[in-house]
Amino acid sequence: MTLQKAGGVSALIEALAYVVGFVAMATWLNPGDTESWSAAQKLSFVLEQKMLFQMVTIVIYVLTGVFLVVLAVALHERLKSGSAGLMQVATAFGLIWAGMVIASGMVAIVGLEAVATLHAKDAAHATSVWGVVGVIQNGLGGGVEIVGGIWVLLISIASMQSRALPAALSYLGLIVGVAGILTVVPGLAELAVLFGLGQILWFSWTGILLLRRAPTDAVTTN
Image (cartoon, rainbow, N blue to C red; front, side):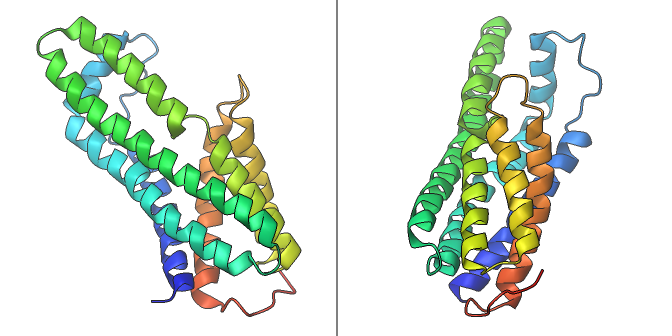
């Protein structure tokens, strides 16, 4: 398998992982209305679904991060001839994002395991620890998407310069990238949903193009 095709497969896996994440949070891992729940009640629900939470986390964080590395390198190879300097910066952000996503998932998985053990001895302390785990996990990539947003934005700018990908895909990437960057602004965290939904389309489209079109093909139309 060539690097481009590996990148295409990786992009499709990324899209699928996002779909799995959205479906899981809307169905299997959705406790319903938790507005009146205490932190202890929320933790109890998570612990009841511990194995499922950990499996979903592996898919949407660890697996996503691993395949993101392959995609970032494939896109670097694809776009570097038309925008070498910009792609060096973009790929650096892509690899940093991959590392943060994997780390975020591992913090959640290992943290939940530790909290589950502690909960059997001291439920109140376990609840406090779980709150700390959540803050660290969100800081690494569970809530703020600025690093991923920068990567998608730079990829889109580079693809517009090199015309190696369709213009419509580049414009979509600009929107998705800006949405991700804006999640760092207090009060705009909900844009993470727009970023995630946009990423499903962006990853799917990018994956299909990498699988179907050779890197040397010029893109002159949408």
